[in-house]
Length: 166
Image (cartoon, rainbow, N blue to C red):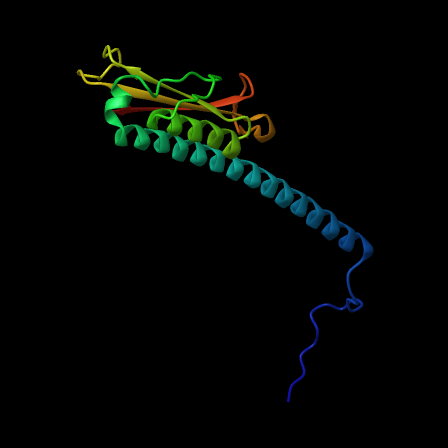
């Protein structure tokens, strides 16, 4: 059998030097910090999406209640402003609003909402008929979302508006 000579004639390598270990630790630390930052942003954006989903569900909730009680909704029994006092009557519309407004406050941080009708057909594509405009707003100060290149300024209130035909 033939023996081949080693191509490297210097001393054999015994392991990493301290410099190589330190460089590896620094690179790993930077990578882990970047990963932690991505995780924090992910949590923030997921919570913001959760709040928007809750607002959408609550807006659909009051629209469904209005469709179930259409005659009262057409008469304006569901019209209420943001910050408006809860109705105290025993009518179905009053009960619906008395359940909807506290649900907004419970599901969304400082949640509130309004319902109004567009009976004049002022919407761009109304074509007659009655449209309802449901607005749900909440405090977004704890969930300040900043996307690269887009900074959402302009107050601490987020608003979701839905227009539906009654």
